[in-house]
Length: 361
Image 1 (cartoon, helix red, strand yellow):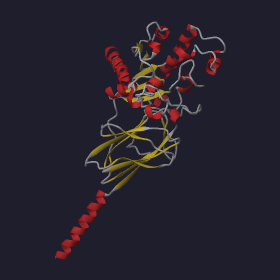
Image 2 (cartoon, rainbow, N blue to C red; image 1 turned 45 degrees about the vertical axis):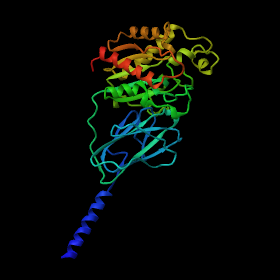
Image 3 (cartoon, rainbow, N blue to C red; image 1 turned 30 degrees about the vertical axis):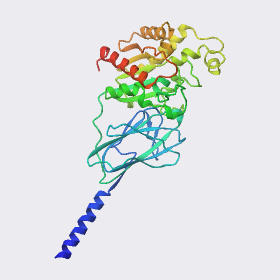
Image 4 (cartoon, rainbow, N blue to C red; image 1 turned 45 degrees about the horizontal axis):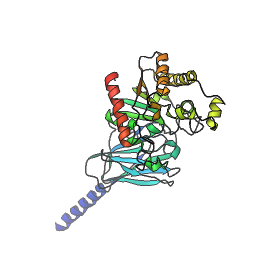
Protein backbone atom coordinates (compact mmCIF):
# COMPACT_ATOMS: atom_id res chain seq x y z
CA UNK A 1 0.00 0.00 0.00
CA UNK A 2 2.85 2.37 0.81
CA UNK A 3 4.49 1.57 -2.53
CA UNK A 4 1.22 2.34 -4.34
CA UNK A 5 0.93 5.71 -2.53
CA UNK A 6 4.54 6.46 -3.38
CA UNK A 7 3.84 5.82 -7.09
CA UNK A 8 0.80 8.10 -6.95
CA UNK A 9 2.85 10.88 -5.36
CA UNK A 10 5.62 10.51 -7.95
CA UNK A 11 3.07 10.50 -10.78
CA UNK A 12 1.37 13.61 -9.37
CA UNK A 13 4.67 15.46 -9.02
CA UNK A 14 5.66 14.48 -12.55
CA UNK A 15 2.31 15.71 -13.87
CA UNK A 16 2.66 18.95 -11.91
CA UNK A 17 6.18 19.49 -13.25
CA UNK A 18 5.03 18.91 -16.83
CA UNK A 19 2.23 21.39 -16.34
CA UNK A 20 4.55 23.95 -14.77
CA UNK A 21 7.13 23.60 -17.53
CA UNK A 22 4.62 23.61 -20.37
CA UNK A 23 5.90 25.65 -23.31
CA UNK A 24 3.82 27.22 -26.06
CA UNK A 25 5.17 28.58 -29.34
CA UNK A 26 3.03 31.32 -30.89
CA UNK A 27 3.77 31.77 -34.58
CA UNK A 28 3.66 35.29 -36.04
CA UNK A 29 0.60 34.20 -38.05
CA UNK A 30 -1.43 33.47 -34.91
CA UNK A 31 -4.79 35.28 -34.80
CA UNK A 32 -4.16 35.91 -31.10
CA UNK A 33 -1.43 38.46 -31.93
CA UNK A 34 -2.40 42.10 -32.43
CA UNK A 35 -0.42 44.26 -34.85
CA UNK A 36 -0.69 48.05 -35.00
CA UNK A 37 0.67 50.30 -37.70
CA UNK A 38 1.74 49.47 -41.22
CA UNK A 39 3.43 46.08 -40.94
CA UNK A 40 4.20 43.61 -43.71
CA UNK A 41 2.76 40.19 -42.91
CA UNK A 42 3.24 38.72 -46.39
CA UNK A 43 6.57 37.02 -45.63
CA UNK A 44 7.07 33.38 -44.68
CA UNK A 45 9.59 34.00 -41.88
CA UNK A 46 7.90 36.77 -39.94
CA UNK A 47 6.26 40.17 -39.91
CA UNK A 48 8.39 43.12 -41.02
CA UNK A 49 8.25 46.20 -38.80
CA UNK A 50 9.24 49.53 -40.36
CA UNK A 51 7.46 52.58 -39.00
CA UNK A 52 7.71 54.43 -35.69
CA UNK A 53 5.20 53.07 -33.20
CA UNK A 54 4.68 49.73 -34.96
CA UNK A 55 3.34 47.47 -32.22
CA UNK A 56 3.02 43.74 -31.55
CA UNK A 57 0.96 42.56 -28.57
CA UNK A 58 -0.39 39.40 -26.99
CA UNK A 59 -2.50 38.30 -24.03
CA UNK A 60 -1.20 35.17 -22.31
CA UNK A 61 -0.64 33.18 -19.15
CA UNK A 62 2.80 31.92 -18.17
CA UNK A 63 5.87 32.45 -16.05
CA UNK A 64 8.03 33.89 -18.83
CA UNK A 65 7.76 35.09 -22.41
CA UNK A 66 10.27 35.52 -25.22
CA UNK A 67 10.07 36.99 -28.73
CA UNK A 68 11.77 35.69 -31.88
CA UNK A 69 13.35 38.78 -33.47
CA UNK A 70 15.97 39.70 -36.04
CA UNK A 71 17.00 43.28 -36.90
CA UNK A 72 18.71 44.01 -40.19
CA UNK A 73 21.00 46.71 -38.74
CA UNK A 74 21.07 46.33 -34.97
CA UNK A 75 20.20 50.02 -34.62
CA UNK A 76 16.53 49.71 -33.68
CA UNK A 77 15.17 50.04 -30.16
CA UNK A 78 11.89 48.74 -28.78
CA UNK A 79 9.93 49.39 -25.63
CA UNK A 80 8.76 46.20 -23.94
CA UNK A 81 5.67 46.81 -21.84
CA UNK A 82 4.31 44.11 -19.55
CA UNK A 83 0.91 44.65 -17.93
CA UNK A 84 1.11 48.44 -18.30
CA UNK A 85 4.30 48.67 -16.21
CA UNK A 86 7.05 51.11 -17.14
CA UNK A 87 8.73 50.11 -20.42
CA UNK A 88 11.98 48.20 -20.62
CA UNK A 89 14.24 48.78 -23.63
CA UNK A 90 15.27 46.06 -26.09
CA UNK A 91 17.90 46.45 -28.81
CA UNK A 92 17.84 43.32 -30.98
CA UNK A 93 20.88 42.37 -33.03
CA UNK A 94 21.17 40.96 -36.55
CA UNK A 95 20.93 37.30 -35.51
CA UNK A 96 17.48 35.76 -35.35
CA UNK A 97 16.95 34.47 -31.84
CA UNK A 98 14.60 34.52 -28.88
CA UNK A 99 14.87 37.52 -26.55
CA UNK A 100 13.47 37.23 -23.05
CA UNK A 101 10.84 39.93 -22.48
CA UNK A 102 9.75 38.94 -18.98
CA UNK A 103 10.29 36.20 -16.38
CA UNK A 104 9.07 35.31 -12.91
CA UNK A 105 5.54 36.39 -13.75
CA UNK A 106 2.65 35.69 -11.40
CA UNK A 107 -0.21 33.31 -12.12
CA UNK A 108 -3.02 34.68 -14.26
CA UNK A 109 -3.48 36.88 -17.29
CA UNK A 110 -0.66 39.03 -18.67
CA UNK A 111 -0.28 41.41 -21.60
CA UNK A 112 2.93 42.04 -23.54
CA UNK A 113 3.52 44.87 -25.98
CA UNK A 114 6.52 45.38 -28.26
CA UNK A 115 6.63 49.03 -29.39
CA UNK A 116 9.07 50.36 -32.01
CA UNK A 117 10.74 53.51 -30.66
CA UNK A 118 12.93 54.23 -33.68
CA UNK A 119 12.39 55.46 -37.22
CA UNK A 120 12.35 53.35 -40.37
CA UNK A 121 15.72 54.79 -41.38
CA UNK A 122 17.26 52.78 -38.49
CA UNK A 123 16.40 49.60 -40.37
CA UNK A 124 13.79 46.86 -40.59
CA UNK A 125 12.95 44.38 -37.84
CA UNK A 126 11.57 40.87 -38.39
CA UNK A 127 9.23 39.47 -35.72
CA UNK A 128 8.79 35.70 -35.86
CA UNK A 129 6.58 34.94 -32.88
CA UNK A 130 6.52 34.33 -29.12
CA UNK A 131 7.65 31.52 -26.83
CA UNK A 132 5.84 31.24 -23.49
CA UNK A 133 6.96 28.96 -20.65
CA UNK A 134 5.54 27.93 -17.28
CA UNK A 135 1.96 26.67 -17.50
CA UNK A 136 1.73 28.63 -20.73
CA UNK A 137 -1.53 29.56 -22.38
CA UNK A 138 -2.46 31.91 -25.23
CA UNK A 139 -5.49 34.09 -24.49
CA UNK A 140 -7.93 35.87 -26.75
CA UNK A 141 -7.19 39.32 -28.12
CA UNK A 142 -8.22 42.38 -26.19
CA UNK A 143 -11.43 44.11 -27.21
CA UNK A 144 -10.62 46.34 -30.23
CA UNK A 145 -10.14 49.97 -29.31
CA UNK A 146 -13.04 52.15 -30.37
CA UNK A 147 -10.92 55.05 -31.61
CA UNK A 148 -8.26 55.17 -34.30
CA UNK A 149 -5.76 57.95 -35.03
CA UNK A 150 -3.15 58.38 -37.76
CA UNK A 151 -0.25 60.83 -37.82
CA UNK A 152 1.83 62.23 -40.68
CA UNK A 153 4.89 64.08 -39.48
CA UNK A 154 8.60 64.74 -39.28
CA UNK A 155 11.18 64.49 -36.48
CA UNK A 156 8.84 66.15 -34.00
CA UNK A 157 6.27 63.40 -34.46
CA UNK A 158 8.99 60.73 -34.50
CA UNK A 159 10.24 61.81 -31.07
CA UNK A 160 13.69 62.51 -32.45
CA UNK A 161 16.30 63.11 -29.68
CA UNK A 162 13.52 63.41 -27.12
CA UNK A 163 15.66 61.58 -24.55
CA UNK A 164 18.86 63.50 -25.28
CA UNK A 165 19.04 65.60 -22.14
CA UNK A 166 22.40 67.08 -23.22
CA UNK A 167 20.58 69.43 -25.59
CA UNK A 168 22.88 68.39 -28.46
CA UNK A 169 20.15 66.73 -30.55
CA UNK A 170 22.39 63.72 -31.10
CA UNK A 171 21.31 61.51 -34.03
CA UNK A 172 22.07 58.17 -32.33
CA UNK A 173 18.80 56.23 -32.38
CA UNK A 174 19.11 55.49 -28.66
CA UNK A 175 17.84 59.04 -27.98
CA UNK A 176 14.81 58.80 -30.28
CA UNK A 177 11.66 57.45 -28.66
CA UNK A 178 8.33 57.72 -30.43
CA UNK A 179 6.64 56.43 -27.26
CA UNK A 180 7.39 59.84 -25.70
CA UNK A 181 6.17 61.85 -28.69
CA UNK A 182 3.01 63.96 -28.54
CA UNK A 183 1.46 61.49 -31.01
CA UNK A 184 1.89 58.46 -28.77
CA UNK A 185 0.94 60.41 -25.64
CA UNK A 186 -2.24 61.64 -27.29
CA UNK A 187 -3.14 58.14 -28.49
CA UNK A 188 -2.71 56.70 -25.01
CA UNK A 189 -4.83 59.50 -23.53
CA UNK A 190 -7.74 58.49 -25.78
CA UNK A 191 -7.00 54.75 -25.50
CA UNK A 192 -6.87 54.84 -29.29
CA UNK A 193 -5.18 52.58 -31.80
CA UNK A 194 -2.46 54.53 -33.57
CA UNK A 195 -0.59 54.51 -36.86
CA UNK A 196 2.29 56.85 -37.63
CA UNK A 197 3.92 57.79 -40.93
CA UNK A 198 6.86 59.99 -40.06
CA UNK A 199 10.49 60.67 -40.89
CA UNK A 200 12.96 63.15 -39.48
CA UNK A 201 13.79 65.87 -41.99
CA UNK A 202 10.79 65.29 -44.26
CA UNK A 203 8.63 67.99 -45.81
CA UNK A 204 5.77 68.38 -48.23
CA UNK A 205 7.67 70.28 -50.93
CA UNK A 206 11.29 69.53 -49.98
CA UNK A 207 13.21 67.44 -47.42
CA UNK A 208 16.75 67.11 -46.12
CA UNK A 209 17.02 63.98 -48.30
CA UNK A 210 15.64 62.97 -51.72
CA UNK A 211 12.09 62.02 -50.63
CA UNK A 212 9.10 64.16 -49.69
CA UNK A 213 5.97 63.09 -47.85
CA UNK A 214 3.86 62.89 -51.05
CA UNK A 215 6.38 60.26 -52.26
CA UNK A 216 6.21 58.29 -49.04
CA UNK A 217 2.78 58.59 -47.49
CA UNK A 218 1.20 55.67 -49.36
CA UNK A 219 3.99 53.10 -48.91
CA UNK A 220 3.84 49.95 -46.83
CA UNK A 221 7.62 49.49 -46.89
CA UNK A 222 9.08 53.01 -46.80
CA UNK A 223 12.24 51.79 -48.53
CA UNK A 224 10.36 50.43 -51.57
CA UNK A 225 8.54 52.74 -53.98
CA UNK A 226 6.57 49.77 -55.38
CA UNK A 227 5.31 48.67 -51.96
CA UNK A 228 1.88 50.28 -51.64
CA UNK A 229 -0.31 50.41 -48.54
CA UNK A 230 -3.94 49.35 -48.75
CA UNK A 231 -5.72 52.23 -47.02
CA UNK A 232 -8.84 50.13 -46.51
CA UNK A 233 -6.89 48.17 -43.87
CA UNK A 234 -7.01 51.10 -41.46
CA UNK A 235 -9.58 53.88 -41.45
CA UNK A 236 -8.77 56.41 -38.70
CA UNK A 237 -11.31 58.62 -37.01
CA UNK A 238 -8.79 61.46 -36.74
CA UNK A 239 -5.75 62.25 -38.90
CA UNK A 240 -3.12 64.70 -37.61
CA UNK A 241 -0.76 66.23 -40.18
CA UNK A 242 2.18 68.08 -38.66
CA UNK A 243 4.38 69.11 -41.60
CA UNK A 244 6.04 72.22 -43.13
CA UNK A 245 8.71 72.73 -40.43
CA UNK A 246 11.48 71.39 -42.69
CA UNK A 247 10.10 73.19 -45.74
CA UNK A 248 10.38 76.47 -43.83
CA UNK A 249 14.17 76.07 -43.68
CA UNK A 250 14.94 74.38 -46.97
CA UNK A 251 13.12 76.78 -49.31
CA UNK A 252 15.83 79.26 -48.30
CA UNK A 253 18.75 76.98 -49.20
CA UNK A 254 19.20 77.15 -53.01
CA UNK A 255 22.63 75.54 -52.77
CA UNK A 256 21.22 72.19 -51.65
CA UNK A 257 20.67 69.45 -54.27
CA UNK A 258 17.11 68.91 -52.99
CA UNK A 259 16.31 72.56 -53.73
CA UNK A 260 17.60 72.21 -57.29
CA UNK A 261 15.67 68.95 -57.73
CA UNK A 262 12.30 70.41 -56.76
CA UNK A 263 12.61 74.11 -57.52
CA UNK A 264 15.47 74.57 -59.95
CA UNK A 265 17.02 77.98 -59.33
CA UNK A 266 13.89 79.86 -58.24
CA UNK A 267 12.35 79.55 -54.74
CA UNK A 268 8.68 78.51 -54.66
CA UNK A 269 6.08 81.25 -54.41
CA UNK A 270 3.51 81.50 -51.64
CA UNK A 271 0.89 80.25 -54.11
CA UNK A 272 2.98 77.20 -54.99
CA UNK A 273 3.51 76.29 -51.35
CA UNK A 274 -0.18 76.65 -50.54
CA UNK A 275 -1.15 74.54 -53.55
CA UNK A 276 1.35 71.80 -52.59
CA UNK A 277 -0.21 71.60 -49.12
CA UNK A 278 -3.73 71.54 -50.58
CA UNK A 279 -2.76 68.74 -52.94
CA UNK A 280 -1.28 66.59 -50.20
CA UNK A 281 -4.15 66.92 -47.73
CA UNK A 282 -6.61 66.33 -50.58
CA UNK A 283 -4.90 63.00 -51.22
CA UNK A 284 -5.33 62.10 -47.56
CA UNK A 285 -8.99 63.05 -47.77
CA UNK A 286 -9.52 60.74 -50.78
CA UNK A 287 -8.27 57.80 -48.73
CA UNK A 288 -10.17 58.76 -45.57
CA UNK A 289 -13.52 60.26 -46.63
CA UNK A 290 -15.00 60.15 -43.11
CA UNK A 291 -12.03 61.20 -40.99
CA UNK A 292 -11.56 64.45 -39.11
CA UNK A 293 -8.31 65.91 -40.47
CA UNK A 294 -6.31 68.27 -38.25
CA UNK A 295 -3.74 70.30 -40.18
CA UNK A 296 -1.35 71.11 -37.39
CA UNK A 297 2.00 72.80 -37.03
CA UNK A 298 4.35 73.01 -34.08
CA UNK A 299 6.11 73.42 -31.91
CA UNK A 300 9.42 74.57 -33.44
CA UNK A 301 10.24 77.88 -35.16
CA UNK A 302 7.71 77.53 -38.00
CA UNK A 303 5.18 78.58 -35.34
CA UNK A 304 7.02 81.70 -34.26
CA UNK A 305 4.95 84.87 -34.19
CA UNK A 306 4.83 86.27 -37.70
CA UNK A 307 5.62 82.97 -39.44
CA UNK A 308 4.03 82.69 -42.88
CA UNK A 309 3.82 78.89 -42.61
CA UNK A 310 0.78 78.96 -40.38
CA UNK A 311 -0.88 81.32 -42.86
CA UNK A 312 -0.10 78.94 -45.72
CA UNK A 313 -1.85 76.10 -43.90
CA UNK A 314 -4.84 78.24 -42.97
CA UNK A 315 -5.24 79.41 -46.57
CA UNK A 316 -4.92 75.89 -47.95
CA UNK A 317 -7.55 74.51 -45.59
CA UNK A 318 -9.86 77.44 -46.27
CA UNK A 319 -9.55 76.84 -50.01
CA UNK A 320 -10.66 73.22 -49.64
CA UNK A 321 -14.03 74.08 -48.00
CA UNK A 322 -14.02 70.85 -46.01
CA UNK A 323 -16.19 70.98 -42.85
CA UNK A 324 -14.22 68.15 -41.21
CA UNK A 325 -10.79 69.68 -41.82
CA UNK A 326 -9.28 71.94 -39.16
CA UNK A 327 -6.14 73.91 -38.39
CA UNK A 328 -4.38 73.86 -35.05
CA UNK A 329 -0.98 75.33 -34.21
CA UNK A 330 0.90 74.22 -31.10
CA UNK A 331 2.62 77.14 -29.37
CA UNK A 332 6.27 77.84 -30.26
CA UNK A 333 8.46 76.26 -27.60
CA UNK A 334 11.11 78.98 -27.69
CA UNK A 335 14.02 76.68 -26.85
CA UNK A 336 16.87 75.28 -28.98
CA UNK A 337 16.78 71.90 -30.65
CA UNK A 338 14.02 69.34 -30.85
CA UNK A 339 11.20 69.08 -28.31
CA UNK A 340 11.98 67.64 -24.90
CA UNK A 341 9.66 65.20 -23.15
CA UNK A 342 7.95 68.09 -21.35
CA UNK A 343 7.52 70.00 -24.62
CA UNK A 344 6.11 66.90 -26.31
CA UNK A 345 3.63 66.62 -23.46
CA UNK A 346 2.59 70.25 -23.95
CA UNK A 347 1.89 69.52 -27.61
CA UNK A 348 -0.16 66.46 -26.70
CA UNK A 349 -2.22 68.49 -24.21
CA UNK A 350 -2.70 71.25 -26.78
CA UNK A 351 -4.12 68.79 -29.31
CA UNK A 352 -6.24 67.00 -26.73
CA UNK A 353 -7.77 70.30 -25.63
CA UNK A 354 -8.47 71.24 -29.26
CA UNK A 355 -10.09 67.88 -30.04
CA UNK A 356 -12.23 67.89 -26.89
CA UNK A 357 -13.56 71.34 -27.78
CA UNK A 358 -14.08 70.90 -31.51
CA UNK A 359 -14.53 67.27 -32.54
CA UNK A 360 -17.17 64.71 -31.62
CA UNK A 361 -15.90 61.20 -32.27
